[in-house]
Image (tube, rainbow over all chains, first blue to last red; front, side, top):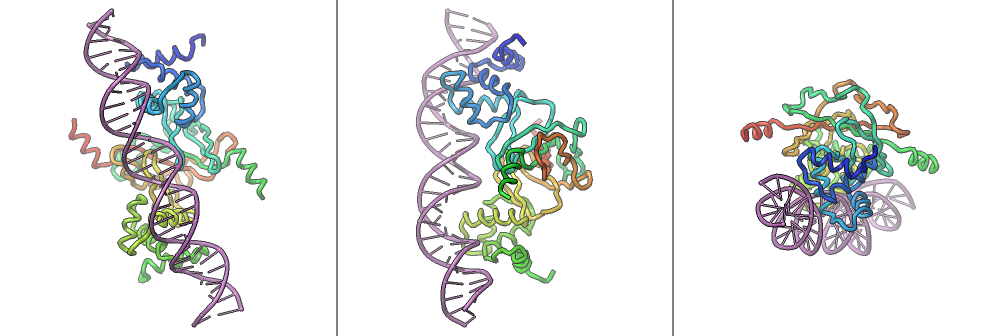
Length: 147
Length: 147
DNA sequence: CCCGTATCTTGAACGTTTCCAGCTTGCGTG
DNA sequence: CACGCAAGCTGGAAACGTTCAAGATACGGG
């Protein structure tokens, strides 16, 4: 708890044999803040911590982090890619049809919910991704106001 | 069975108060052939039935059809949008991580599988979309050959 | 402290999708 | 059966998110 976020990130990176660089620490710090952020938002937040980081560096870092299992990439249909820090607990997401807001949904059915590779046409399945679609509280009110 | 595909399409369109146009009939005909097609593929197939159809018309038609429930839009992360004719039986999809191939998976757990809006942060959920990720038979062999 | 290489920067390009203005067409009306 | 309105199509163009390429930089082992 007393360790700055930067040091935690450095440890995580080193544990996977990855180089510890300023952009990576900044991105990890931003992701640690929680939420489901677009690349754009991450880049902006990173630039408040560092003076200048190229957009491509952010893309590259995010790619490396998600490959290393330190970040998770989610991409609801019709939205640009988003990244979150929460990994390893295969939780799912609710996406608002109106505003695109995303919230986490814990897996209800225990470990692997619908992951039953039943007659998947010969496919070898290694992950089941569940996306719930609906309306967030704010957009529910907005819609109710229209009626 | 004796009705040409075009007439079936016309009936479907008229039933929802939509205008019956050449591009719409052609797109419906293509989708009736089955599969999960990209806009590009649909446009090409349509152009073998009609002399010329603009790309924007295809986008527009597909948007109208999916809004009307005559087509379903699926968009696995990292892939362009795809469309399929099968609607109303909320089945799911397996996507190959290597080649992007898509296959249908019937819903195993009865009607609505994981659709349990348990503590979805106040969201009103109306659909649960499940995407399985894995390797198709072809890419399994290709990977095995590499080892 | 030095070197090799992974990483970052800069600049550009790519493919998908959407926007816009104007013309064509389907289809209810008289 | 002709008319007129609006939905729908055409064509050109551009926006968007993302990725690629070449060179400069800096991390970390020796």
